[in-house]
Image (tube, rainbow, N blue to C red; front, side, top):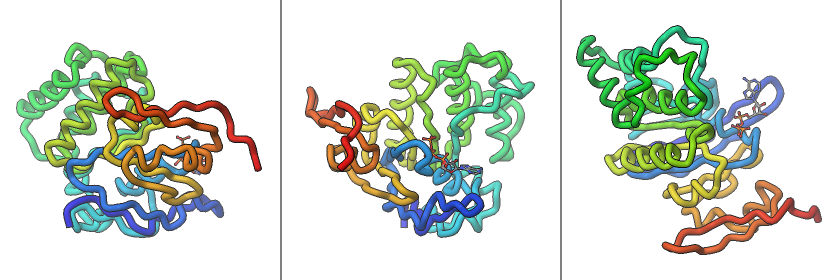
Length: 258
Ligand SMILES: Nc1ncnc2c1ncn2[C@@H]1O[C@H](COP(=O)(O)OP(=O)(O)OP(=O)(O)O)[C@@H](O)[C@H]1O
């Protein structure tokens, strides 16, 4: 079966269950899926479990192959992971960090690796940062370098944890356009986003996490409803259709209890 399937995903930290047998629908190649939900809902934990960076119960398969039972090198070729924050305490310059990410998943000659890494940075509009130390980059610059690291191996599955949180408006569009393009070429893209306006505009599918489970999933207009937003976030919301048929979520306030 083509796509990403995550079933019965459970994670607990000490006695506290964070994910409780969570199921995702089959996420198909070509789709951008947004994971949304309140703070501490378990979105990052779920991404890390899918990437096999977090011990978990349940099963994750990519195109029918169990990711947990795959050699780590094969998995790192197939799965690109962009963490919420790129560690800044590195002595590498940006280009070296992208080359290191490439070589972690592939046997590739030094010159070829240099070219491939620089090509990705050029595509993302960050070639000028190539020789800058990671420790000297701004939060947004670091986020773009982190994206370059995640996509340089040309992964089949791309997992991104709040990839736009530090980006200005133009770079948000650049990053999300790039994700759409990558999905259009047959990859599976899963991104955690808090910004429901961006989610409504860019996602094919939204999965709303709540209480350690999938509370709702579907197309943006199916999931971004006043009732579901009240249940999951505890807010009073209006959903309006604006130009080009897009939906817009307006938050009027917190939901009055009872
Ligand atoms: N390594 C850890 N040890 C203990 N508890 C953890 C650990 N990692 C996450 N948690 C807890 O698991 C819960 C879910 O965290 P997670 O980061 O997955 O949430 P999230 O939905 O991504 O939140 P946010 O939107 O705030 O980034 C939180 O209560 C968090 O404190």
